[in-house]
Length: 165
Image (tube, rainbow, N blue to C red; front, side):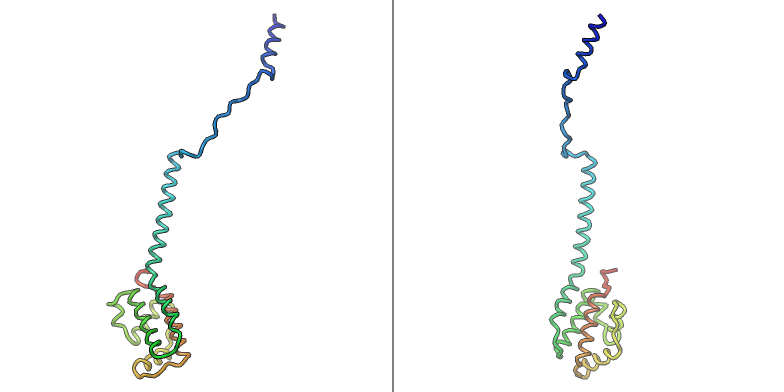
């Protein structure tokens, strides 16, 4: 009997009697677990926050882009273009700060304000030339006009503005 049992056990244990393993279905991506939904919500919130901040900065500096675009048109050196250049600087300052703060500034107070609020330096010779231009009808020479253009352009690009604080 023991030989018969051994033969039966061996027959049952042979590899021919084995069946394939039943593999479960692969785990799908959806539906997501609750933790993934929370993470997705947080990432979308963060993305929206950064996009909104970028939009606010873009809108806040729109006047600078418009002023630089207008500055690119003022290339010729004549009296009306020089006055337009000075007017552009003043309008940009009013847009960046406030009319109450800017409207009263003139001569040295204006140039000092430009230097304090940006990285621009206005030479004393340029100040005198502009004073002569405005009050004595003296025309600026080419180097003075180019210097004024450079000062206004640098001021528009680098001034702090009340919104940049």
